[in-house]
Length: 375
Image 1 (cartoon, rainbow, N blue to C red):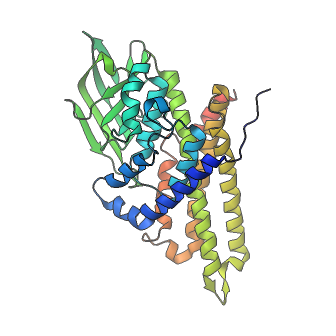
Image 2: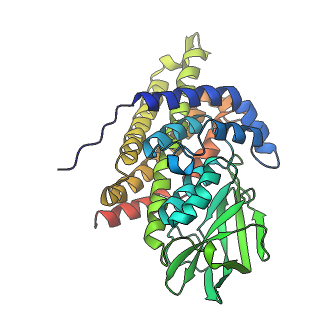
Image 3: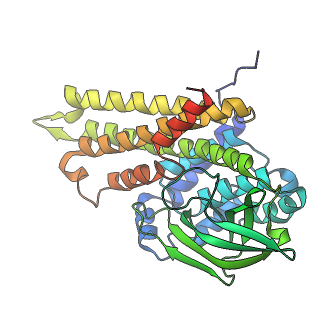
C-alpha cells in the first residue's frame, strides 16, 4: 500500500510562507498592483530581482543547477501567498511553467545550460503551447517544424502565451515527423512576431506569437523526439501550482468579506450579524477549504504519474470554480461599493476568471479527470 501523504507544514514551509507574506505585503500591496496593471511592462523589474535574490525563481530547481532544491509542496506554499496579493509579473510563466518544461523535457546538458539562468532570474522564459481554435491539449499542434541540414524551420502561431511580450526565450511546441517537439526560440529571431493580446487580468499579460519560417539549430530542440507525454506532465504540474495560487486568492477574498461584514454597520448592527451574510461567508469557507484540500493533496502526489493524472485536474477544476465563485460573492458582500471598478474586489475577480482559463477550463479539467478514471 502506498504511503499516505502528510499534510502538516514543516518548519521550512512555514518560513517560506511567513517570509513571502511579509515581503509581498510590504512590496506588492494592492495599491502597487494597480500601478503595475497600468504600466507598459506590467511588472516591476526591481521586484523581480528581489524575488530572485530571495531564491523564489529557483525554489523548485535543484541545488546543482543553482536553485533551492524544493519541490511542488514548497512552490505551492509560495504561490498561495502570491495569489493572496494578486502578484503581477512573469513568475508563473517563467519560474513555474517554463522551468518545469525544461526539467521534464530537456536533456542534462540543456538543463545545465538553462536552469541556472532561470534560477537566478537572469532569464525570463515562457511556454508557448496553446493555439487557435481553443484547444487545451498539447498533442497534435498545427504549428509545424521541419528538419533540414541540421536546422529546424518552424511555422505557425500560438495564443495566450503568458508573459510572451517580456520573455527572453520562448519554449515553442510544434509538430514534427516524430511527434511533438519543443523548441527554444529567441523572440528577436527573424520571422517571430509578438503581439500583446487584450486580457481581462492585466496583472498577467499574454501575447500571441506568430512564427513565419523561423530557423533554429538542432541544439534548440529540447529533449526527446516526441515530448507529448512530458508536456502533459508539465501542464499537470502547472495546473497543481495554479490551483495553489487560486486557493490563496480565494482565501483572501473570504477574509475581505468577513472583515467587511464585521465593520460595516446597517440599522445599528454589523451586517455580519444578518443571516444572509452569515450564510454567504459560511459557504465561502466551505468552497475555500474544498479547494485547499484538493490543491494540497495534489502537491503531495506529483511523483506518482497515475495519482497526478487524477489529482491535478481535480485540483484544477475545484480551485478554478471556487475562486471565481468566492470572488463574486466577495463583491456581493461588499454591496454597492463592491460593484465599483475602483474596489480591490475586482482585481481578484479578474484574476480568478482569467486563471480559470489559463491552463484549461474547468470543463476541460473534468474531461481529463474522467479519462484518468476511465469513465
